[in-house]
Amino acid sequence: MGAPQPMSDKAIEQALADLPGWERNGDEITRTYEIRYHAAVAAIVTIADRSRRIQHHADLDLRIDHLRASITTHDAGHRLTAADFDLAHRIDEIVAAHQAIPLD
Image (cartoon, rainbow, N blue to C red):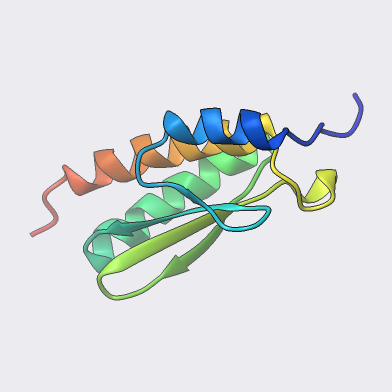
């Protein structure tokens, strides 16, 4: 299996169109979720488990009232690949599920 192939700017724009809330910041995509702290902690555990399974990881920044995810493909020279957009979709689903779980 070879190194992941970076996407063209046009392909990145098209992929971002299917990911509301995500933005391109140079050679990474980012999204900030407004989410309660404990729900975000639970989401991070699930994100880490799924990331391990697919061997692709996001940088996660947890704050008291939000979670920020940043994704790029390190094996492609810190460029964007299809794997980044797949992971972004997975993170969206995980965060949405954890926001729906009452923790009180």
